[in-house]
Image (cartoon, rainbow, N blue to C red; front, side, top):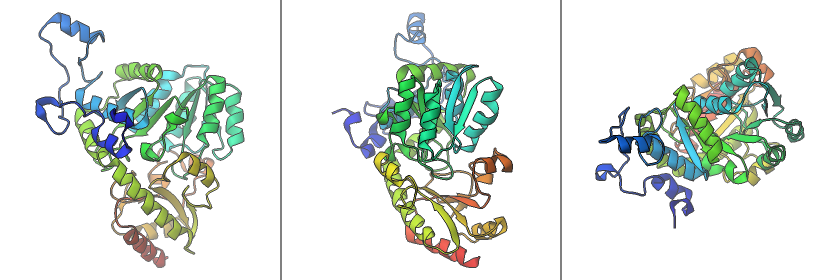
Length: 393
């Protein structure tokens, strides 16, 4: 049996590492070298031309980064993977490599703040037509795709309001139009959702989040059909947004426990969401695992777990939000997610800090919304401190 036939927990540990490693190492070595030397010109030329295995320069490929890419490729079930210096590097390189002036791209209103800035500011300045559709309106998404487009960009669950898109439905419409479909799978992770198996062409991650899982390394990764990913690889080769060998090593170390962490975070987020949904001082809770979520049935069909992320609004103003957050213990007030530590923060300083208050309002993001990333702490302890902080209001 190949490693691709194993369960996700086994893949997370062994993918890309089945063969003996250099120097007999039990863990992937950090190959901290920019160039790679050859004893003769003929071998060097064969590697440079892609006719033989090897590495030339770490802006192109690197042995440590290559193992990380292979692990991600197998976890998502793709043909090829390439890594980047950050999640936004993966997103921007993918879009810029496949879009040209005059092209049309269809996406959703509720994508991550940095992605929204690309759609609202960068692509229109390049003469690319951008149509952002109401995320929860599946009919509208289908209708805009059916009008014709070069690329469809989806994110589900969305950041930060955890909206759900019916991937199979949107992807099928895109396929009818011959459009490329890209899915940001950062929130779900390949443990909970695998868009490539639903027909998506490419899937990407901010590896800084769940894949790494320890808030100590930045990175991004794109996985999908070989010709499409190859196009992005050639763009990245020139633009240079490459993942460092040391960051790849840290991400690989974190990925060994990906399955364990995500399953624990799924359970904790569900318990926290149910607690908050029943609390009188909480105005609303956004979590696809709740039966009250408007796309709960869709999430059940396309996800094997509902993730460790949720968001909620307290019944009050921004000053009350600050008081509430200030009374929480054992939580980082920080702009990240997916870590072994629980993190909290409003979109104005986390997911949509790049956007103005007007743009956040345009995207339907309340200034009293809080994004909550469950760590691997005990769920009862997290609920207790939330209860104590809410009692202060």
